[in-house]
Length: 271
Ligand SMILES: NC(=O)C1=CN([C@@H]2O[C@H](COP(=O)(O)OP(=O)(O)OC[C@H]3O[C@@H](n4cnc5c(N)ncnc54)[C@H](OP(=O)(O)O)[C@@H]3O)[C@@H](O)[C@H]2O)C=CC1
Ligand SMILES: O=C(O)[C@@H]1CCC=N1
Image (cartoon, rainbow, N blue to C red; front, side):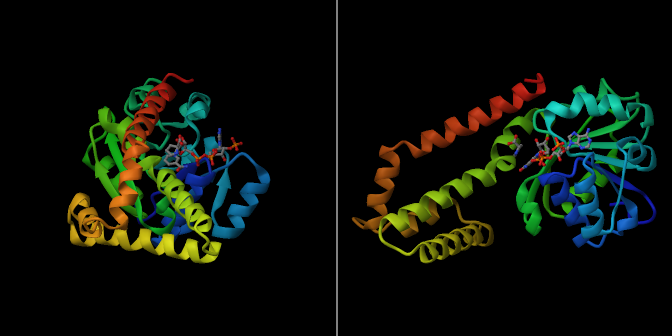
């Protein structure tokens, strides 16, 4: 990450933009090296008060920054690139986190020589447990990629992947937290259905999730083995897992992630 004087702009301060901003601040990044492009005055004031950052126009942010992170919706990308292209210059680094938007799409709309990185973070970055993937565009050298890696790495892990894998990455780790929260919601509702107070059901489910995630990460044991360790012969878990198979939960996950991957591809077409 650029520590001495190099400016980083974040354009689009919604959920992911603020997540990135807060992560950089937590990681010790000096706020006077950050610039925010935000089009709503009230939100701009909120960010200035909360983080002490400067909110400026998108064009000014682009002109002053060495690295510009585009954290807007894919559907807004073409308009934003048209707006900031006059301020972009060769060697500058542009990092897009927009689902589906390819480096080709961006490179064809900005001056030749601008380095483009496509990134896919996720919301656990808010608690410094993010998982991000990055892919280089045509004009990226190692220093650009390292800069993007450091920026995304301020809030969690970063994996370099070929761009052709990015739609799948988006379907797995980009959207992934939502699937996990959906499972958690479903388990809490089931607990309430079985007669547990909601607060107890929530505590039981959340700690079970945290403990299971920690086991996966810290033991490195395959999830099938961990599942088998829980499944006593003729016991409760076997009965539950049979129901999950009967209800085709595994097939549902496959179909869901294919749908997410396909939607990512469509977003590139602007639909
Ligand atoms: N949320 C997530 O978990 C993840 C999101 N992403 C990607 O991050 C991007 C942002 O998503 P998310 O944060 O969820 O969306 P949000 O809608 O919360 O944030 C996008 C923000 O960009 C603003 N914006 C749009 N156009 C401009 C512009 N021209 N100038 C300045 N600001 C602008 C929007 O303002 P307005 O409200 O006026 O439209 C909004 O505040 C998307 O491309 C998404 O694919 C990637 C990984 C995970
Ligand atoms: O739902 C979306 O399109 C974005 C991209 C990944 C997570 N959220």
